[in-house]
Length: 360
Image (cartoon, rainbow, N blue to C red):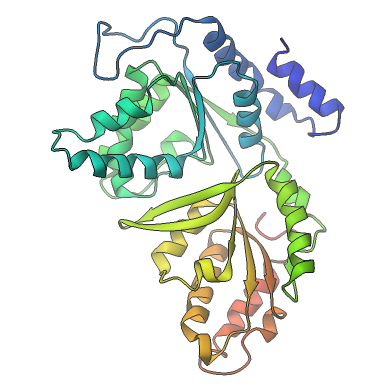
């Protein structure tokens, strides 16, 4: 059976990926985890305790892979998970996973259990030996208070965790409310996982967009066809909806994969969303495809205000934008209340089309 290093080399020779020394430096750690999982017995500790009071010897350390946007972290994790010949594995986006946990705990509370996390964790880790989390990011106080207890249960059950993140563990939930209560989780990560920085000068997502048109008008069949091609190139696989929780409410991005999200104008601006929702979206994605932006006027003033707020959030977070619209930015909102203020949004939409935008 080919090793990860051999698989990576084969893909590079075929031109399916670009060889990158920084990516290659991550492969031995992933290969070690893969070898342990495929060779070791399936025994794990019980989620609620068990006979063991120390970490089983056959459970390797996990991997916390962090680095800048577009460096290939998600690609390496997918390569690792796809090559791992065990069935007890799961790959999930971190936000989606936490949403699953919150829903499970809400259901558990209705049964009157003392600790609603215990049955949820027991179900989550049942028959799973590897969890691969994409894009760990902690921005919510509820998640910050929960994640340490949850991961402790994963590790106690002998589950190996591999995760990607744009931040070093020490930078997670930085400046967050009651952060001192979060610090034991950072220590837990460093104890249970190898922390490895992917240091590459290349932003492959940005490179793939270099020279590409990213704003399409008019919106319609031709624009959708062009965006479909860009989306396939950027994501390289099937997308799934991503549900984000904002103050107890669900905000759904219809399609998400590897840091890129895709939604229609009415999905994000026709719904009753506010600044907090858009900030959460901007923190959760690195690229947004927003389709079918209509002409804006007093007839859809509320949607126009939400669109302005969304663009502001994306701009400040340096989220790459691909869009289809009824007109060029300067002609989207030409009359009615708010048209003058929209000039700044139009300017930002122009700036965000630059091939180098977001790299500074």
